[in-house]
Image (tube, rainbow, N blue to C red; front, top):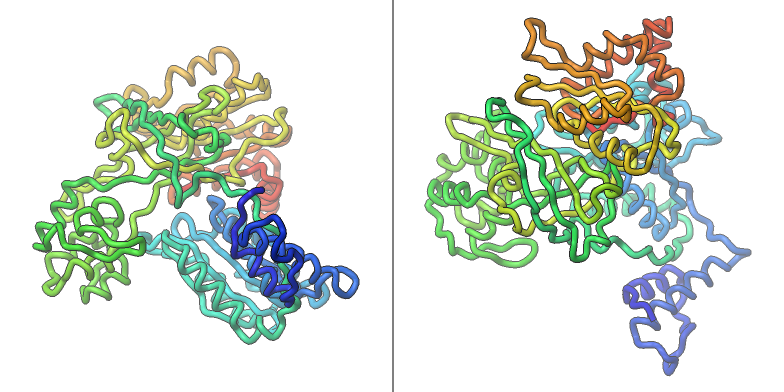
Length: 577
């Protein structure tokens, strides 16, 4: 018999409110199996009382999710809510309007929001329309009967940390809804904060007094063998430089083998690969030198104990200085300060207080640039190495340099697939694609084109790509020109910003070829954008609006409605960072 979580049965029996032994002692099951079956039958028994269905209180859970993390947390929240007496539904924020929330007949009285912040304090694409309506001057007031709480997902290295969640929380309260729990603004390491927020919300009087009958949730389906906390150990096959020596940047094509268990690491084009890096030992030595701390001193981590050197090498972000760390260390933080800016000024620092202040090292997500149809058992990435100078010190991106230069071919690297539910190819293979991805934003579109070619898809494809110089920065030139020559790419639009007197970017090419762009939209094309959220994606979005207005003969409001409809129909998808 399949092994089950022994706690599930006990939890389900408690929820059922029954201590009955449905599977008695002496039956041919071990203790764990009996506990599971007793809980399962107890839950079914609870559901059967009173004609069949437990009385649960409606709960609406809304997400704004750019990469899929917020949506995944909402699904976990829905399962938890069932055990607390709530029948929860989840949806993206764009699927609802403030008027819907205010409607006494259709609006739920209990709402939870999980909102990611992307770009420069922006809401996720599937929350933008809702946030705009919520912030409008004519937005209807919300009744006090609406009880809400907000959890934010963000990155504290950005100035506008969790701004979308903060704006949402403040605006809901200003419109009259009742905040039952304070906003929790999560950093990249969000698991503990998410669990604490859930516990707080369901312990509030508003939620406890409204709770209906708790029910046992069905046993969860088997989780993937490998995930963020249990990565697969892939093997670096090679890392080759795509850019020329004269380029101002170094962009690498990285190939990782998934053999030896990789059958459990399935991915689709559009997904991202999470990569767990190790710090550069030279950076560890620099921190030990400036703090004068003993590298063999033992420190306590969440997972146990380790020497200070090993903790710095494997477990912590050695660059990002958070406000919490500055407060803990008694350091007056300036905007843009890094960890090494603070350390020389700390006089009473111990090994443990150093560790307690550092942010946990997190995996880096990269858009996958290969198709499993063409490269089974492998995953390819397109990674620009990050190098910079800060306050006279040279710095680098941990993961980009780990894969690009520090990890040798044949070395093991922890990886996992991060599903991207809102950035996948259309189910209908006849849909034309417009793909806009300058620089390393080419990655998912290289995968899209590989995949469509491998599957024999003959629908139209149009790629916008660009970078600084055609001679130095033409990533995947051979593949793109071959696809252009054989017709797999119907249109290839290239923008080289430094090869002409007037800088030319992909958004300029969209407007230059606006008539064709709009004609493709009118015959059902889907738009995909990948790359920099702060500048490129915003400029591309503005260009698309202008093209729709001009060639659709629409005013600004009507053009916005047209683009919003594309987004709602999943015909305008973005993977931006």
